[in-house]
Length: 298
Image (cartoon, rainbow, N blue to C red; front, side):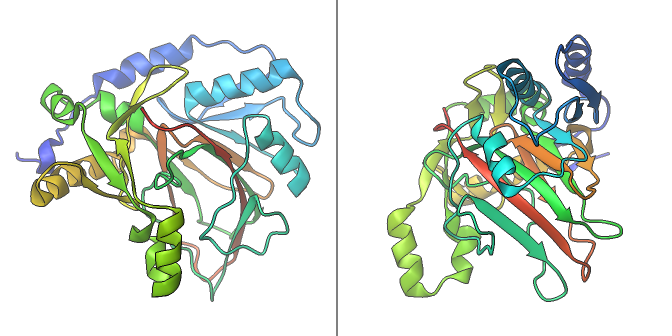
């Protein structure tokens, strides 16, 4: 039996090691309910209406690093409390391209309905087109559809670790160009596009980035913003990127979050990709996102 792009059936041994590693973690100030074997956990014992003490804040961040995406339920918080929580982990960014009617510049509101359809149903890493992409995003649900509208998250550390040795060798030292025009450019008039390209020129990032805290290596290329590999023939570049993009789709690396009103997801944008399912149209789905500025990938 032949499988496209060398994707093979059977177990991925890293996942066994990963699950065993996560099984050993103990927490003092929070409770944790795992969502998937290698990625995702629901966090309990936290009330985001109030400032978190330093020990709890440290544990929440440690949980983010461990599970790569963490979830909170029943958090009826204001925009100010939403931003205050996110600011505990770094400075907040303002997004230049996504229109939003949220009153705060740091808050991006995704309000989808019959007329404004969701187009985030592609595997991607937020703002990889920035010189310093985000550390992570904190997304909270205001209005959810009766059914559907889940968000999927894919562990790009697992995706890297489960590659064969030849592919890992092929990726060693390679860099790729990330460019906002691949997605947001089509919505801009030529003059505005040229102006924004001056502000946000295409940037190069490594195809494999290393976490500054854990040293974990992750695949860092996504179909929304990564255009080509530096120094490689375009046909070969497209082929290799196509193989990398497919890794986000492997269910063994994923978890799926079913939203409820006042649910929150906080993901490590350096180590995961996400996909917002658009299976709820024409129902309404309203979410607010706050994004934390990160570091330049290495």
